[in-house]
Image: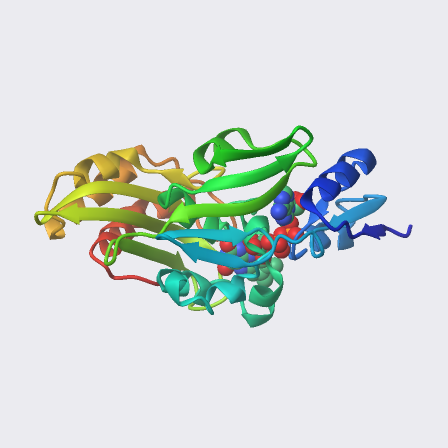
Length: 271
Ligand SMILES: Cc1cc2nc3c(=O)[nH]c(=O)nc-3n(C[C@H](O)[C@H](O)[C@H](O)COP(=O)(O)OP(=O)(O)OC[C@H]3O[C@@H](n4cnc5c(N)ncnc54)[C@H](O)[C@@H]3O)c2cc1C
């Protein structure tokens, strides 16, 4: 059966067509096309977001706005987003990074969703275009409740992290092109030698990326040293509900989680 490819020229039009035809939206298609090719999804039409005007990165006043169809590879070309360089480097392979979009990453099943993990730590807000118009949604609400079928994520917006306040670590089975065993992203603010604010997000520990409030509580108000980082790792493991998949067992994830939280907080970034 032939599948029609719709290419509307705005997010509003994409939403309208998606709803009218009960058609899935497509960003880069790295997840969706596989489902179609394997016959697990049999839509009559698909709604590509390529021409909907949702690309591009804007940085102003310490705030970043990333259009949903921005490719992962494009993030590496923006100097102000240099803190995301380790995320991009460890994200699939070059071909995948040139196809996969930022918006699509929010819908990736765990343990994928490396950018979503970062956006959770950055307390991002999503711009959603739906039937009644445009609205903003906190990333935590997005992960808790999702969005309605046909609604389009148009952009992601967040404050850039403080200089020296960003942490990211992705533990994988092999060096490149691998899904996370455990992912850790943290945005920290420090003053007077102590951590004044902390948002710590984990992947490999739930249906979506999750915050570790126990780890945040340990870190906030403390000097960020080996002892604090170790205690934060233990606190994170104490509340994490890890899962088993083809990459690692829940037992293994829980076991290595404190190590990676500690290393991430101490600035041993990347893999
Ligand atoms: C070999 C391989 C390696 C991978 N490696 C990684 C990795 O290292 N890290 C990682 O995080 N992920 C990885 N992924 C998963 C995936 O490629 C990425 O998460 C990617 O960012 C998904 O984006 P996409 O645009 O291709 O999504 P698509 O396949 O286009 O869409 C995925 C889902 O999101 C919905 N969607 C897409 N865009 C929007 C939007 N703007 N608004 C509303 N709904 C939307 C679609 O309807 C669909 O349900 C990998 C995948 C493969 C095949």
